[in-house]
Every structure is written in C-alpha cells, then in structure tokens.
Amino acid sequence: MTIRSLADHVGETVTIQGWCYAKTGKGKLVFLQVRDGTGICQAVVFRGNVEEADFETAKSITQESSLIVSGTVKADPRAPGVPGGYELDVQRVQLVSLAEPYPIQPKEHGVEFLMQHRHLWLRSSRQWAAMRVRAVIVRAIRNWLDDHGFLNVDTPIITPAAAEGTTTLFQIDYHGEPAYLAQTGQLYNEANIFAFGKVYCFGPTFRAEKSKTRRHLQEFWMVEPEIAFCNLEQLMEIEEQFVSFIVQRCLAECEPELKVLERDTTALQRVVPPFPRITYDQAVEMVNAAAARGELVPGYPDPVPPLEWGDDFGSPHETYIAAQFDKPVFVHHYPTQVKAFYMEPEPDRPEVCRSVDLLAPEGYGEITGGSERISDPDKLIAAIRRHNLPLAPYEWYIDLRRYGSVVHSGFGLGVERTVAWVCGLDHVRETIAFPRTLTTMRP
RNA sequence: UCCUCGGUAGCUCAAUCGGCAGAGCAUCCGGCUGUUAACCGGACGGUUGUUGGUUCGAGUCCAACCCGGGGAGCCA
Image (cartoon, rainbow, N blue to C red; front, side, top):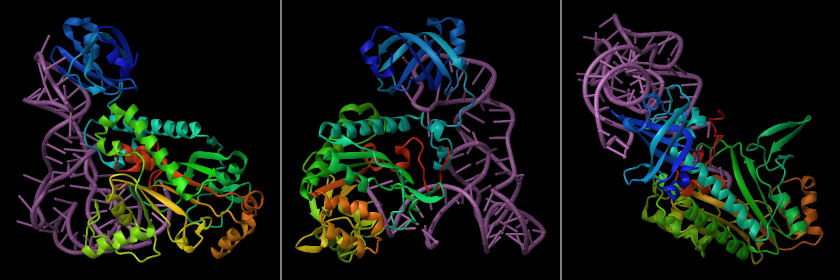
C-alpha cells in the first residue's frame, strides 16, 4: 500500500510504513505527517481510538523516525500531504526506530548547510519532487528515442586527449598515460550511426570549468542522439518533437510533484511543436536593438549588452533572446568561428555553419546544442587544420567520411537544465541527487 | 581568474556612534480534540570563520588569509 494510491482505498483499513516527516499535537490528538517515498499522508492519532501505549508512542515520535501505522483511509479536505486530501484515522502505531534530533527543520535554511546535509535534504518534499520529475524525464527521453528507431549505444567515459585544450577536462591516470573524463560522446556517436543508423548515448559527462552559476555542474548527464541521413532542418523537427514529448509526459505523470514545486504549468502546456526558429543574424539584430533602447535583461540588474556580429552569445544575451518567446526557441546558423570544428559550414555562406541551439524560456538557457556535421573528408581535414588541431588523433574520425559518408546531424540535451526548467528550480544543484559543483564534492 | 555579497547558539537572524552576547525555531519539561513551519508557560544553549593590528575597551574599525552565496567569462 502506497500513499500515492491512497485515494483508491477510501474506507479501507491500510498499513503504511515510512518515516515521520512532521508532527503536531493538540492534547488528545497527534497529527503525524508520514512519508513512504511515494507521497506524504497525514495520520491522525486520537487518544480515544488507540491503545494508551500507542498514543504515548505517537506523542514521543520524533521527526524522521521510522514507523508503521495502520488505520482507515478518510477523505478530508483539511488533510495536508502529497497528493493530499486523504488521511489515515489511526488504529495502530508502531515505532521502528526513534530518530535522533533531526538537523533539517521545516523552515528556511542556507544553501551551505543544506548541501552539507544533502543525504538528508533529499527527504525534503521539494527535493523528493525534483528527483521524481528527473526520473520521469529520463524515462521519457529513453521511451521517445527507443520508440523512434534510435538504438542506445553508449560511448566511453575514459577518453584520450581531444587536443581541444585540456583546461576544462578532468585528468586521470590511465596506467601511466594521461586520460580524461569525457565531455561528450558525440564523435563516437558518429561512428555508431554508420553501423546503426540512429543512435543515442546517455550518461554522465564532466567539465572542469571554473563555473559557479545556477546553470553549471562539474558532472552532469547528457543524452546525445545522432542521426544518419539527417540535415539541420530535419534535426530541428526531431528536437522539437523530442523536447515537447518530455515536457508533456511530465505534465501527465507529475502533477503532485509539480504542485509541491509550485510550478506554473501553463508555461509548460505551451511547449508543443513547432518552436520558433530564428537565425543568429536575427538574434544579433534583436539583441542590438534592445541594447540601443537600453532594455534590461530579465533577472539581471544590467541592460542588454551590445554584440558584434561574430561574437558568441553571453548568458545575458541568451536570457534576453529566450525571454522574447513563450516557447523554447531555436537559434541556428551561428558563426563558424565560434563553433566546433566538425560543424558543416553553409555551402554558399561559409562564415556561418549549420548549427542550432535550443534556448529554454524563463532564463534556463541553452538546453540543447546540435548541428549538421561535416560529411566530406577534405572539408573536415581543412577544418581540423584551421582550428590548429593535430590530425593524427582524428584519423579514425576522418575515416567515417571515407567509407560511405552521408549527411548526418545530432544534438545533446542537458538533463539537469531540462529538469530545472520543468521543475521551475532556480539552481541545477537541486536536479541531481548528489551534485558535484565547483565547491562541493561531499557528500 | 575577475566582480560582488556574506560568515554571531544545532538552524534562521539581530546587536544603534566602538561600550553588559540577544531573539525566534529546534531540543527537553508541562498544558491543550483539527493541527498545517500550530499555540501558551518554563528550561537548556556562545572560542562572534582564522591570525595579527588599532584602542581604556572590538561582533563592530584596519590588514592578510580561509570558507560560502550570487554573477561574468566558458558551457549543457
């Protein structure tokens, strides 16, 4: 019997095993908020309805003590909880283990304190809700890809030097040879599509960036689909279907969780195809027009900074652009010089490339980044040289263009940013059970 | 790396001009039949991040360092 399904058992006598989330009392009444992992339910212990010993037990129970309660399920609009509206009229209370004084109280705490108690903080309702939404998002990701002909082929986490500069890579010792934790599985994905057509990898990735913002973790999860016989326009169609499915699945399955998180779901209901598409050129114009008017960036104290054509967007630019739309927005055809070497330049305008980022609304930033990949071996070799990268480590990658090359595209979606956006959380550290931030590795 | 804000009781915070270290919550004891972060009464609780300096006197002023929050750059 789970609290999640309490509504289906009104009038029945049920047993719940869980933990005491909170307790209040009033003389001959004790109200226990009981958690069982699926929700929170109020258990009402009235002195006249239980054995004297059980009433004394209920009175003595401390926050987070483990317990087993039996009682009759009653619908009562006064009953708090998740989903709420139902409570237990208790007949039996059994203490399993009395908890020592619990450090986390149902009130405001500082970030540092909560992070030090992450192993306990996870029990709090908002953290519980976010982890459950994350699990639904992960399942939706896999379901959609599996149902649309993508084969899950995971890529290595230990990788040799990519030669793109190792400052943002975590180095490890590979039997005497330096190796690095993967930042992406994309190059391997490109090998895999030639064997399987459509693939995705899904796993943790690592960035040793000195980033200390609400959007950054040192270790984060990314799903990277890659598709053979797919150009940039087709890629955007796939992305909008994929992202919309994820969001709609959360709306369908996570109503209690989103309520706990106090998420305004009307913004999420709008997330259906098609998403608006603008070019980098148009985005620069928008930004510079706003800068000329001295417009403020939502959430920032400063006006929109102006931009030179050819510069990559900063966070304030992305936030401003995304705020002009009430859905995620595609920005495509970035300058070739600011993007990775493997992105296909536009044939009749090589200063821009066939790349696309998807910016989430409400300041959650870039949630996907993708592109059409260079499919001609000579163009790829030229691009590698232009970026001053050594050819030797990329020989296998160039090979992919030598043996049956095709137009192909792919993208990566950051799980934590997606969870933060869907949940309306203001920091990605709350979207993963044990976040690795610039300053926190414990617990 | 840079900018910015902060560090006082287990937690969240206060302390006026540099002049006795204070509350609420939590915990413990007592009371209450509808509580929602309950309420009422009582008790317990301090190396003011560290080191040095100025001063009759420093939580408060100065210097250096440590730790944390927010942001920039970079990125998903």
